[in-house]
Amino acid sequence: MTAADLPAVEAIAAQVHPGYPEEAAIFAERLRLYPPGCRVFAPDGAAVLAYLVSHPWHLLQPPPLDSLLGALPDLPSTYYIHDLALLPQTRGSGAARAVVQALAEHALASGMSNMSLVAVNASTGFWERNGFAVHHEPALAAKLRSYDAAAQLMIRRLG
Ligand SMILES: CC(C)(COP(=O)(O)OP(=O)(O)OC[C@H]1O[C@@H](n2cnc3c(N)ncnc32)[C@H](O)[C@@H]1OP(=O)(O)O)[C@@H](O)C(=O)NCCC(=O)NCCS
Image 1 (tube, rainbow, N blue to C red):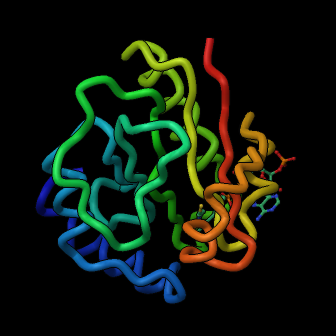
Image 2 (cartoon, rainbow, N blue to C red):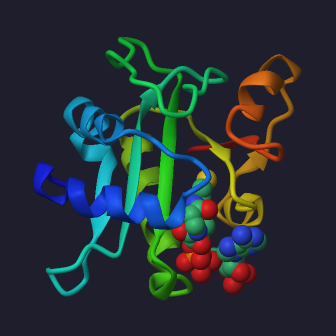
């Protein structure tokens, strides 16, 4: 992902995640803070059909929806996937599985022992097929409800 991709990323987010609105500044900040964690899928070199945003973070401390991070931690304890979104015509292509695997290899090579995320939009089954498991953390219940009523913290161990 480059800054030039941000309008397309925002358009995909608006289409795919109407129930989870985030300001354009959120995507721009993630890209500025951690470019290697921000990816787009543009198979013909033109239209952006999917994006993924991720970065090192604190385990069991998912950022609230639509919030700026400020800075990344000096000592991260998880590799956090903020969002993965494919336009409908791109789903089922294997692109999602491929980018999650690429991210797992990047996170492991960066010294991380796990990846984590907040699964929304009934995506828990997809993440389970990609090695993640639901982690029940009562202290996080209120924050997870700020995403949606069924949001779940999920963790994948690496290595
Ligand atoms: C979730 C998403 C990224 C998955 O990508 P996809 O291309 O549809 O998934 P894939 O085709 O690679 O599916 C891989 C596997 O997960 C399964 N799967 C996909 N979405 C699923 C879901 N919502 N629930 C259960 N299983 C699911 C597929 O059946 C497939 O299983 P298989 O390996 O046994 O055949 C995509 O559907 C999407 O962008 N959805 C909207 C945005 C979203 O919800 N993002 C996640 C927010 S945390």
